[in-house]
Each structure stands twice: as structure tokens, then as C-alpha cells.
Length: 407
Image (cartoon, rainbow, N blue to C red; front, side, top):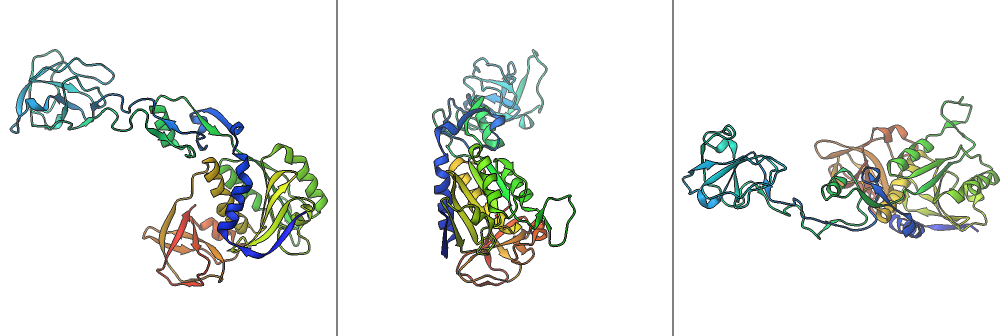
């Protein structure tokens, strides 16, 4: 049986409820070993320790001459040029009084402890191979332009922690450490259902009282961008029995059900009616937009019911589902949160956490896009950030500092 909760719960409390609902999905059988590129955007499922030093040997940071720092006084010295050291070779030991032409990334010869860049040498060019030559070099303290063994990461150190979102940088590190595959969480399978007799598919005739369905595209694209495997049904009518049949047909094959619309207090709220007999709670979150929310299980499958207005359903995804997925499974990565100054004043409902759409500008100010209405899709399309006005703040002046999440 579904339950209705009259009082408002906080954003933080509802996010925690969503976390608890989805936490049982983080099981060992959801972990799979993937080739590195196939793991792009996934969450790392186990700590990764470095199996070797990186770099694995001391190497030159510059094209130049490898030398023994003790051979060159402060005034500089003339040194005998020996065989060059190209990258990828194991050089011979460097004798006292000698300098070896060395390429960037090449292994330092045993005995050498510094590199002088080619442009500081006299002459400032490498001699012809196998020709006797000398070079005058300035003093270079030990370690100059040398990348030490393990200066990036030491063998046995934590390279990546479980829960890390695997982007290009993380995958590049794994490749540098010699890995070809990585343990990652399998993408969650989500059933996305939009509801409403007033909603029609884009591309069909728009009759009186009808609107095109933007929620499905808005949410599916957000979910896919967040790494979810989305199954999207057609638009469900406002008949509860038909919606229940759709959910029952797909629920055995998915990890999560997300619906949009039909969760408010009205007389024809189809999601509420379809959830009769199931452990689903409908409540009001102290948030604008996106206050009405549903949460629970349908035939044992986790269910989240988002409001029907486009901005409300997107804000619900960004405030609740996206951050919980990141916290539990390492994917997607958190939205970058920055501080910015309001370009204009705003008002906010007392007792609610308001989320406004905005554009963060180069001067560090954020310009609000559109009003507070949950139907303003064009304002959302112009925005690159969500502007947060915490509960308890009724008004802010232009220039006030706020937290924004970059979209």
C-alpha cells in the first residue's frame, strides 16, 4: 500500500532515502572486468595499487646533456662527449669528465645525476655521431631536469580508490601502470516511464490541450550521459491499470523504475493510483521546483517518482538520483560545485531549497535564466548551471555569493 506524507522533508533527508533505496544494488555480482576503454565513464569497483614505480627508471626531462654534477664547477666546464642516449635504450655508465647527449624520456646513464638543456650548451647542438667532440656546460645541481624513479607514484601506493569515476586521466594512469582491464560496476538498467493523457510524442499532430513530451528526452539523455542503461516505454496513459501492466511487464528486467508525472495531490495522479498495494511513499520535499516525490518498490524493484513538469523532473534527477549513483557506484562524477556572485537579486520561498537555472559568466557572476517556474524549458536550455538557494533564505541581493553546480 502506498503512503502519503503531508509534511515536507529536507532535500538531504530525501537524498539519503534514495541512497538507502539503491544501496542494496551495490553487490559483488554487479562488478565486471572491462578493457580500459570499455570502462570509460564507469565507477571503479576496487582499490588499485601501483604494481611498479612510475616512472620505472630515472629519465631526462629535456633534450640535452647528461652529466655528473660533481664534474662541473660553478664556472662551468668542458666535457668530453660520449655516445648519445636515445629513448628506449639502456645506456652504459657515464665515466667521469664525460657528457652524454640524451633525449627527453631517455634513461639516465648510471653515474649521471643531472641534465643540461641543449640550448645552454656551447655549442648548442649535438655533435655528429661517432665524431670526437667536447661541449662546454654550465653547472647543474644533482637532480636538475631529471625525473626520478617513482617521482609520479611509488610501487604499492594507492593509484586509484574504489568509487573513482574512470575518465581519460584515470584510464591513462592505469595504462601507464601496465593494466589492460579494470574492475568496474555494471551500468544500472533503468525503466523510464512518462505519463499523462495530455502528453504526445514529438512529431505527431498536436491537438487541443496537448503538449509534446520533453521529459522522456530530457531524462533519458541525462541518464545516458550519467552512464545508465535506459529502457524507455511509450507514453503511459492516465489509466492506472495500464500503467501497472507496463511496470509489471518490464520490472523483471530492470534495476530501477523512474516515472515522471502523476505524483502530486490531485485527483487524477496515475502513478499514485498504479502504486496501490505496493510499498511506495509519496511525499513533499522542501524544494522548488520538484517538491512532489515518490519513492519505494514495485514488485520488489526500486521506484522513484519524479514530478511531471520538465524542469522539476530534471532537478529531481540532479538533486537525488545523479549524486546517489555517483556516491554508490562511482559514476557519474559529481557536478563541479563553485561559488559565484549573483548578477541580480532574487527571492525564494521561505522553508524551501530553491534551485534556479543560470549562466556562469567569465567575470564570476551568475545570471539567472528565466523565472522560478518549473515549465521554463527554454531557460533551462540557455543555462550552464544550477543556482542553489538554501532553505531558510527568503531573498538575496545582487552580488550575494551562492553555490552553483555546473551542468
